[in-house]
Length: 241
Length: 253
Image (cartoon, rainbow over all chains, first blue to last red; front, side):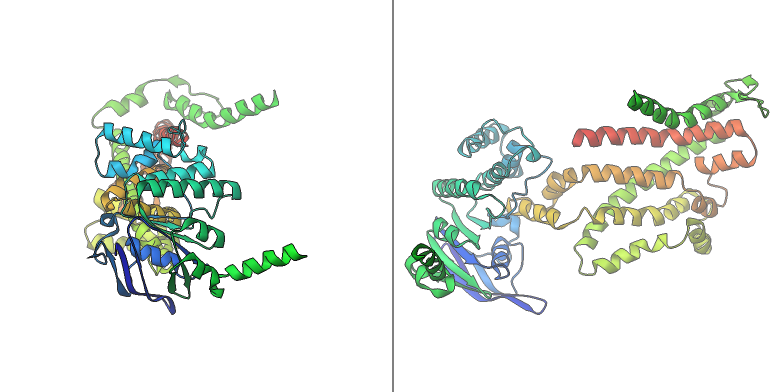
């Protein structure tokens, strides 16, 4: 397996956030993780990214244990709900940030960043500062900044939570297209049922510190705990009135 | 019309003390109720240019002490505040940082003078530097505690997952993001040191004559012309720093 998470446990104070959590993910796949607030989604992603240490358990990437590898050497990018653009850098420099850290040549940085701006449909916005961009544009820049370094795994923590419905739909499509194009293994965390179904090639439910990965989306739909049946019931009732 | 009048009135109110000090710094022989001195001279200013002049030495000493204090308080405060902000005992550490402000500087100095004497730090510049740092360093810590918030931590973590090591993250993310705050802190710590009188007088035991101490000395001697000159010199560096601060902050924003 490309990404293997085994028996992860994490406790904050008296609260056990992760309970012997395990799952595996193949390369170039996007897994949606549905979960309510406080279900341990963010902690799971932060442990995979190397931003938190587990109390127990292992994270393996391409068969190599990652527990002792610091975050900056994992090549696993973690994106927050907020775009968190660096306020002192314009859109171009925000996207090019990871390439500058890797000391690419100026010509290569320019060429690759301009291509990325093009893919993100941000032509003409390169010199704008974060405060001058709309919410959707800021989120695009954040994606560009993550994708340009070609991470082995991309971790998305409710990335569209702060966007309006229309922008959210457009961003979902853009992300799917870009991730598919770049073949990056992705974990997409959300509390939105429809978004979880739409975004993932694979789907999982996170509840009380445990993660259940479903064989098929049909299995996910059938499981009463996911809330899909409840949702279907709601719309059926509305329609029959 | 009213707006313009208000603008000029405000500018006049700000500039009037400077103008008055400037006028008196060129004067000699003033008697009440005359509006201006009877004699105009460059003698007071020429005093500054002589290498043995106390005033010139005080000016240089004050500039060095204040620049040193501002640099140390800003740098140390920035780093220390980060550790405190993310520490589980954040509140307790912060309470410690407020401790020097419980007493007036003079009382603090009187309390500490014995220890300074025993350590050989009384009556010399290193002692005054250390004493002023006791006030300015906690100020830097308190000032930057708000800067190190969850958002800044998230940015730091984001930079790490994008491949930035601690040094790169510090130089490319944290330092530029803090540029405005660093400037303001430097400016304010400079002012704390620049106008510090109580601690400097007691720990310096009259041997470390900063410009502020000199102004009080001239006033005590009823030497209004030298006091005016020293006061003008005292007001100019903060005014210059304020202008630089404004330029940089407006450029940044």
